[in-house]
Amino acid sequence: MKTTINKPANIGSYQAEDVQFLLKDLSEISLEDTIENREIKVQSGVHYSESLPIEYQPPKAYVDLFWSTLQENKQKVALCVGVVAEQIYQAKGDKTVLVSLARAGTPVGILIKRYLYMNYDVLLPHYSVSIIRDRGIDENALQYILMNHPDAHIQFVDGWTGKGAISLELTKACQDYQKKYGVHLDDTLAVIADPGYCTTLFGTREDFLIPSACLNSTVSGLVSRTVLNAKYIGKDDFHGAKFYQELIPIDVSNQYIDLISKEFANISKDAISAARKKGQEKIDTGFLGMEDVKRIQSEFGIESTHYIKPGVGETTRVLLRRDPWKILMRDPTSPYVKHILMLAEEKGVEVVPYPNLKYLCCGLIKAVKESKA
Image 1 (tube, one colour):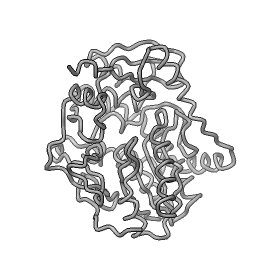
Image 2: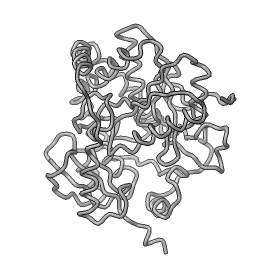
Image 3: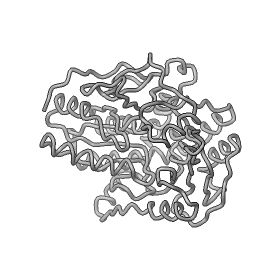
């Protein structure tokens, strides 16, 4: 295994003891493009990781909805974090190194770390690394972790699952890593919610709103999506990201972490009990959500499943940073889709009733590459 001279980047608004970002700081480089331009390029073959969307800043009503949703869901989120944390600790103990997938996994990794510290007085290392669909995981970041923690039991962490693209990418990346370096990595992905039945390590399989899905960088430590562009990232570099320091006045990342963490004392008994019960069950995956995706692809004549994003978290992302075509909605009365209906109305996106859906909702991305000329 080659040595690496990379060091964690001093970026983001989280405390260093909460997370170390194994990313290259690209803050001074202009990487943003409009959603429309970016969509045309991506659908014409340019990889999405080569540029960044302009960070959408929602109106006050939407931010107010974020806070009210957070207050309503904070104990549920804390319980799901606790259930996952208990399972990780029971399986891997204090040799665990948490490796969250930037950026949606970062706040979840911090919450798991805090839960285990509060309940077991153990401070696990926590790193945030980049994984990119069709490009794999940042191997330089993995090498850094294994050099610094040779006895590590790595636990990968993300926020939620959609149709399972990142779960599959992680499995492939771990297999590739073992072939190259002879190092086995556990590809089990720990998430708060697994509505797509993509992993065996989850807090719930209910498609519910994880409040950190509502916003972009302002609830993820002011760190951008990760970037893999050969102009700026050499073969020995970590994947890149930007630190949006100009958004510090509206950053709520640490407030979110603190609010959920305060609930851990109230849910720890239930979390221990639920984790123990899961340990005695046979849990299957099956990627059941792909059945919905394939049916939607056929019914709506959609060219690629990449344009279909199922689940509350993924539908939110479509509205925040892609060019949405339609939103399919199983239950518009659910409290977990209020923000989606608000965003859809603001952006003029049609919401289509679609009761035959395993998920609460599904975002469809507009096909735009024909308009390139």
